[in-house]
Image (tube, rainbow, N blue to C red):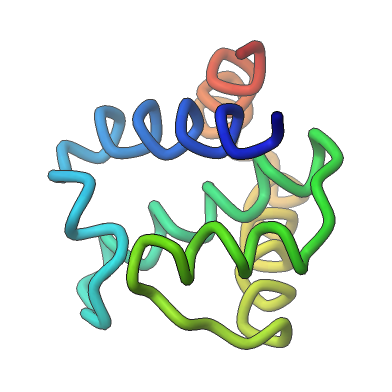
Amino acid sequence: MKAKIFSKYADKVCKLYGLEEEMLYTKTKRRDCVDARHLLYYLCSIRPMRLVYIQEYMAENGYDIPHSSIHHGIAQVKKRIEDEDTDYVQTIESIANV
């Protein structure tokens, strides 16, 4: 059940950032790809989805990632929200309603 939600979030995040979904699962450090992955982790975490599931779904798509990196990504999104980036918050709210 959570896999479908993960896939919907991944699709919406990729559309938001103008990425092909394969780019989300590559080991690139391009800023847009990294930001998209972080947003994906955050959306899944507020669903709530356990980190192990996020890690598993990423691995199923060819992207192995440790728990600590997922935590870091979630923290980066929370920091941006706390900095009161209203456009970013509105975007998250619109995507989160899957």
